[in-house]
Image 1 (cartoon, helix red, strand yellow):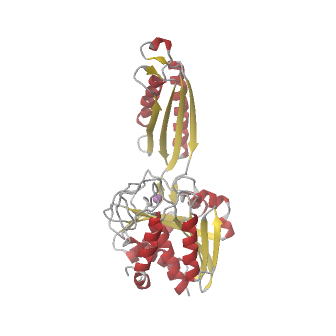
Image 2: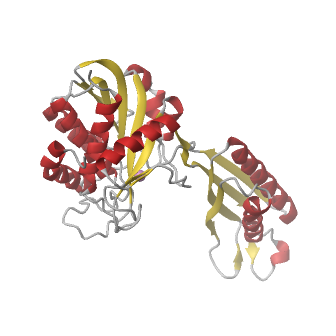
Image 3: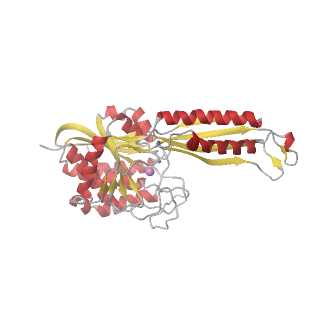
Length: 385
Ligand code: NI
């Protein structure tokens, strides 16, 4: 069975929702219009409960099946990115400097499509909690929802989510059991030296030399301190300092990202960064302060639920990979998977620009596949007798 027939019937309606959302992107927790649009659609579908204002602008809706049973949580993220859109599409962003460049407009649409079908048909025993979340792109909306206690409040037993994937065929699926997305941390190094004339460096304590020394030493964390068969990325992504060719500046700022899967690897990186920053500060006669921000944890798929979800995906598509391996990107759905078993899967978005690129657009052909996946997952996880 490919896409569910009833969902294919309203594919054009889904495209209209998706393009409306795409034209009106909102950032982080400020998803006010998006949440209002989602709630309005859900009311039209006749879902049983709608809870607004969860984690500021999140929406949770409940659909009751035809009999008693557990509650399955299905999650979509709703937020956009601070990027100037360059798709030239007729439905391009109407808000300068904001764009749905990660396809969360499509994720919201897929979950709305599943909601419409499930509210109409209700061929399941139990309940569905539709979780529409703000602030995936920084802010950790999923963590806020977990801290607000939504998993307990709505008695959610399992959780599932989809993310689109450029570069793989539209409507295909892939996932992997166990770790699928990395933990993400951020480090900041503030270096304070003593500036002066570029011609008299002996009278200065040069923060640039110290910064460059630190950046070079940081490269050895992966190459010299780390066991080669574990996954680790340490990337320095910003250095800011200086104003002119004849001035040694007072200060320098170094920033970067750390991606890990294991707590002990994360701990090793934190310790080595401390040593490198302290050691270089002493060696170069500057002051340096390291700030290490622990971010989203690793996203860990439950192996049994992932095998089940991949099997559901095989009903929708002949192209399903259930052992795709892990990626070094990050995802705040990790916070929900820390508390409940479930699975995170990707749905193919075809040959589009990459995620977070100004030319990216969600492919509307993928939406019926994603909606059908969510709908069949509920029908199979909560079968009617
Ligand atoms: Ni995303």
